[in-house]
Length: 212
Image 1 (cartoon, rainbow, N blue to C red):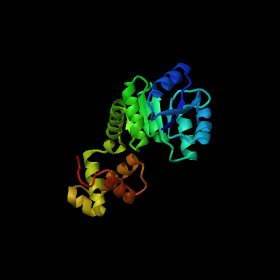
Image 2 (image 1 turned 90 degrees about the vertical axis):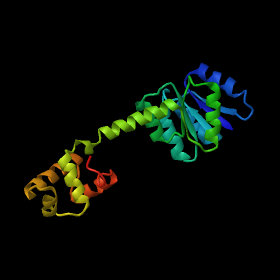
Image 3 (image 1 turned 45 degrees about the horizontal axis):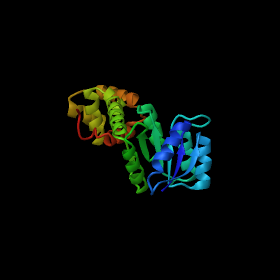
Image 4 (image 1 turned 60 degrees about the vertical axis):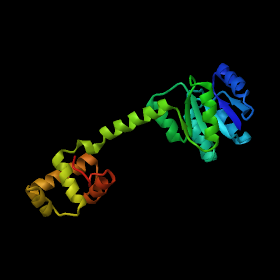
C-alpha cells in the first residue's frame, strides 16, 4: 500500500513514517504539511490511501478531502486527528472521507484500519460511531415532526390515506374548520406547500404507520 501523510506537525509525520515503515506492506510515498500540498501529491503520486489531518494551515483537511475526491472519486482518505466532536466528524464524513481514526489510537489498531480501508471497508473509530449515533438521535429528537401535536399527527396520518377534510373530520370527530386549522399548522411547522407534500413527508418519516 502506498500512503501519503498530510499533517502540519513535523514530529507527528516523522513518527508515523517511522512506525508505519516497520510494516512491509506499507510504503510512505509522500508527506504534506498542509491541505494544498496534499492535493498536489494526490494528483501526482496517486496513492492507495491518504492519511489526512483536519487542522492544517492554508487549506484544512476537510477542504482538501473534498478537492481530492472531486478530482478522483475513487481516492481513499482516512482522517487521522485528535477531534472527536460531531462538528468535526460530520463535516469530514460528509466531505467523503472513508475512515476516521484518532492520533491517540493504539498503533496496531491504526494499521489494521489502514489495511481494512485498502480492502474497501470504511473504518470508523468506535468513538466516532458513538458520536454519530448521538448526533443522529439528537436530529431525530429535534425533527420538525416532533413539533406537531398528537391531534396534528392524527390529521396528518389521515391525509396520507387520501381522505378529504370532511372525511378526516368524521374520522376524528372534529369539525371541518378544525381540520383546516390543523392542516394549516402542519404545513407551517413542516415548511410544506400543500397536503400532497405533507402526505409524502409523513410516509418518509413513518408517520403513516403510527400516531405516537
